[in-house]
Each structure stands twice: as C-alpha cells, then as structure tokens.
Amino acid sequence: MIETKDILETINMIDNENLDVRTITMGISLIDCIDPDIDKACDKIYDKICRYAQDLVKTGEDITREYGIPIIHKRISVTPIAMIAGACQTHNPVKFAKTLDRAADTLGVNFIGGYSALVEKGFAAGDYALIESIPEALSVTERVCSSVNIGSTKAGINMDAVKKMGKVVVDSAYLTKDSNCIGAAKLVTFCNAVQDNPFMAGAFHGVGEADCVINVGVSGPGVVRAALEKNHCKDITEVADLVKRTAFKITRMGQLVAKEASSRLSVPFGIVDLSLAPTPAVGDSVAHILEEMGLEICGCHGTTAALALLNDAVKKGGVMASSHVGGLSGAFIPVSEDAGMINAVEKGALDITKLEAMTSVCSVGLDMLVIPGDVTPETVSAIIADEASIGMINSKTTAVRVIPAIGRKAGETLNFGGLLGAGPVMDLRKGNPEKFINLGGRIPAPLQSLKN
Amino acid sequence: MKAVITVIGKDSVGILSKVSTACADVGVNIIEVTQSVLQDMFAMIMLAEIDKATVSFAELSQKLEQLGEENHLKILAMHEDIFNSMHRI
Image (cartoon, rainbow over all chains, first blue to last red):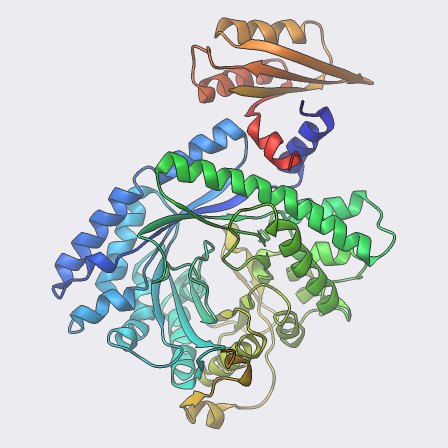
C-alpha cells in the first residue's frame, strides 16, 4: 500500500517545489539522409524527423496528464549536421538549419539541437563551412541550437577551432543584436562533449548512438533546497545523504517517464540525465541550495566545496534509481537562468573567476554568462581555451555559453525572457590574450589520455 | 490499473459524496479511502480501480479537476505508478 505521507510528499514536490521532468529529447540519426544534392538531403531530413517524432509532443502531454508530472519540454537532437553537410560542400549549410527549424515548427517542439561539428582534433569535410555558417544559421532560425566540440581529454584542444569560435560567438550575438543577442544563447562550445545529452543548447545525437532513442533530463533544484530546509542536518555527511535520497526520488520519476515514453513511442530508451537544472522561477535555484548549506551568498569562499558535494551526491543518489544514466548528470550553473546566481552577481559576490573555479566541479561549464558587448573575439576564444583546459585535464565535460551583450557594458542587464532568464552583464579579466590565441595549432592531449 | 485521487481543500459538507458520485458516474471503482481533517483543512486520498472506466484517464482527471474548481478544492487524479516508483525500490 502506498502511504499517505508519500503521496502528499510527491504532490507537494510538484506543486510547491517545482519538481518536473525538464525534457524528453528524441535523438534521431540523420546518417541515412546524406546526399550530394543538398535539396534532396534536406527533404530526407525533414521527412525523417517528422516521421519519427510525429507523436513526441502528444505522448509527452499524455504522460503529463496521466501521471501528473509536468514535462516542460519535448525536444529533438540530430546527428551533427557537419557530417551531413560534408557531402554537399559547395552549398551554404544554412539550408540545413532552415530545414531543422521547419521540422521543429511542424512538430511543435521548442528546440532542435545538432547544428554541430566535432573538431577536437581537426576539421573534416563540412566542419569548417558549418562553423562559419553558425552566426547566420542562428539568426535566421528560431528553434535551432548549435554546438561545437573543440577539445577532449583524448585529443587535446584544437586551438584553430578555439580561435574561430571566439569570432563565431561574437558574430552570433551581433547578428541578433535586435533580439537580445539570442543567437549566442543558442550556441555552446564544448570540451569532452557527450553524445547523449538531452539538454539544450548542447544536445546532439552522437554517431555511436542508435537510429533513434529517447533521452530524458530530470530536474528539481527546488526539491533539494526544500529538503535541506526542512531537515536540519547535523553535519555535512548528513547533507550529502539527504541530497542523495532526494536525487534518488527525482530520478525514479525520470526513469518512469523515460520508460513510459519509450514504450509508447516504440523507440529504445537511451539514458536519464540526472541534472539539477535551475529555472528563473522562485525556488528553483542551484545557488539557493548552496546557500541553504550555510553559505551567506553563492560565490563566497566555500562555494566550490559546497557545489562539489552537491554535484557528487546528485550522481550517487541518481545512479541507482535509473537503469542507464548518461548525459551531463550533475548540477548546472547557468547564471541568467538561476535567480540565486543573478542575485549573487548583482551583489558583487560572484564573478567570472569564481564561476570558472566552480566549473571544475559542476556538471558542465560557464553557462549563460552575459559579458560586455565590446569584448574582442580573441578574449572569447581565451575564455573558451581556459574552460576547455579544465575539462581536458579533469576528464570532464566543460562548455562555454557566453552572450556578448552588444551595445551594453558591465552592470547593465540583458533580458531574454522565459526560461533563459535575464543576466547582468559581467566584468571580464584585464589584459589581452590576442597573441596567444593567434598562435593556433593544437594543445597536445594530456598524460591522462594515455590510459591503454 | 489504479489511480490515486487526492482531494485537498477547506472542509465542507458532502465532499466525499461529490467525488465518489463523480467516480461512479464513469465506472471508476473506489477501493480504499483515507482522509484526515487538520483544523479546517481537508485531505482525502482515494485509491481507485479504473480498468472499467467509461472515459479515458485524461478525461477523468479533467472532470475531477473541474469538480474541484467548482467546490474550491484541489482534486488530482494520478497514475499510482508515480508513487510506487518514487517511494519503493
């Protein structure tokens, strides 16, 4: 028999503590859509996506109604488009972006990820042209998300790609300067990108994946914070245990939704991504969890330790609750999407250097950071290089999603609205890294890559 | 298949009767009821068999939600599996 207190606990988590399944993401391989004729390739892509995902949104809504669990997003990730575009190099790959956008619009999904290239060791056919086309692609489409992997522990860091991405980020912001530089918010630069990430903007369907899979991303920072608030933990070991127990419950719900969606859509279940993904909503903040642990404000000394504990406990709690765990799994720290982080930046407690330290223990990297609009492409490249090196050395995924706020200076605010939130423009470090970035070449893979 | 129906709100005359009538109307069999009244707050949880229901789960949950709104209550119908999976290993 189910106990009353368990029922009320679940309902309370959903109603008052923002518990939700953040996304059901269908990964679709486009390898069989490759065609030297770009129009034929685009037709095949549109048809395949629309055929495979035709019931995705409806299935998500049905599950929400029957189980009472809010499923916020239904999304699609596809094979990195650079691989498809390699076969028709004489054409502008933006056509693929427009095709993806049209498919997303037809299906009613809010984002489609995979306008991507994997260039950690070098550029293959199609990669360079795709990367060049990213700013245009993100400015002429609404729902397409883009990502580029520029480094890995195994391959080192492709500094030519890093240099290129600095300009791509700035250009993406510039081309969308009339709509709050939104282009840069849909673009992620990765080191050690994962192939089964269900979360945008960095989702793509890896080449080692099946033809079609269902990946689910759970969330629930509000639930973890509330659990810490209700139970007065005696010491930090108790805090870790409580986070684990809470993460277990959250993940079980994600596993249920993933199994149900996979069976209703007749698509294999891929992974559950155990992530604490904040939203700007009150009470749905990762920063507030850290503060609940006893920090006066997120960003003060001790923040990195608290985040390390949180990130690890979330994984330990979640891993037993799901049959396949994957994706990014851990705690996200997107500044503009987290009310507590925004507050910490506005109060001067959190700056880019502390955030960079936090990214060595969080699940991804520098995320949704608004930076001054007059930033040089070389400085953005240097931010990417720093972040990628943290990922490369520590064998973890790191990413950079910074938004140059064109026409704005530090202290002003850029408001995206909706789930992307609003971010205060943050100051950067002084000095010019131009010469270093212009060296180009590759940072050799570190010693820890030699594991065989 | 079983559904868990939870009714939360200010206590008033006839809540149990209204909810059970609404269930009976669509062939939903109530197997178990537990309720508690804390001061003037009313919380009732019903376990119901819905295999023979004449309406879909979505319609049932919408119907109950509407009944709740008319009576200033919050009524939720949820598949029992969510509770089983969250609270049982």
